Image (cartoon, rainbow, N blue to C red; front, side, top):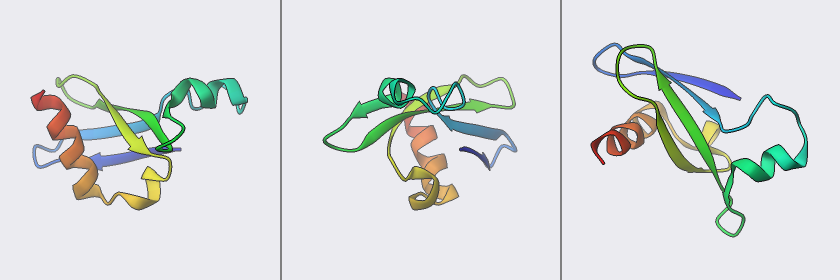
Length: 81
């Protein structure tokens, strides 16, 4: 699933779980898995502007559990590292 959020600088971030869309195969799901114990996956967020993409470690249900403000905060934290 793909999700878009817009930050205060009017940059639209498109976030998608890593390897999503390649196929529904279990090997692609396993490739995106960070930790089976914590049920976390890699999510890549790409900006519409000149900023760099970021890779986030998020819970399996990140699409529903994180609101836009929380997702943007995680993107900002990753950019500052």
